[in-house]
Amino acid sequence: MFYKRVIRKIRVIRVIVIVLLVSLTWCFDVSAQRQSGRVYEFLSLPQTARITALGGYAISAAEPDPGMFIVIPSLLSQDQLNHLSLNFMDYFDDINYGTVAFTHYYEGLGHFGGALQYVDYGRFTE
Image (tube, rainbow, N blue to C red; front, side, top):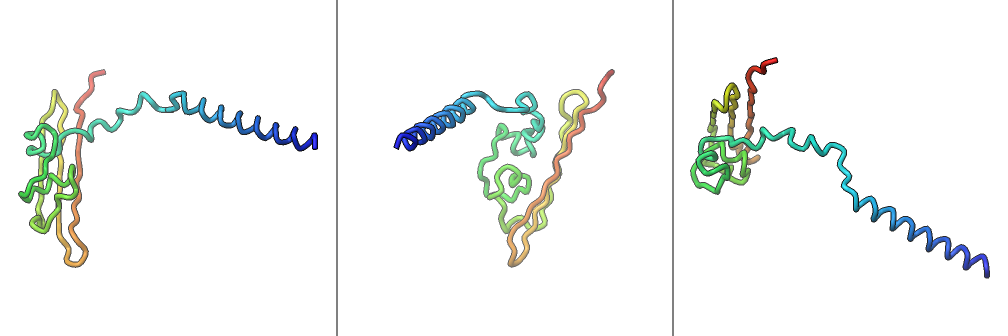
């Protein structure tokens, strides 16, 4: 009888310790690579001239612009048969970036689109 009470108390203390340890780990900011969170910042560059003109936000448009699906994939439609979008921008200093997007509709499979984004940071002086 005495041993059962002792074992029950040990189990309760064990559960309390586990709960405290778990809650303490949630309280601390656990991120191993916090300063490298901006590595893929170039992906937030506007992909097409239309998206740039809209302030960087792609709104739903009924026109068959193949570059819009990069931001909103639901804009792919049957109106975009073999459409190609080429975009190039001479950014600050020596930085250049461009986007190539292609869409195609396959009968029975659906609509597919693919895009490539290119960023050239130019020359760095040593």
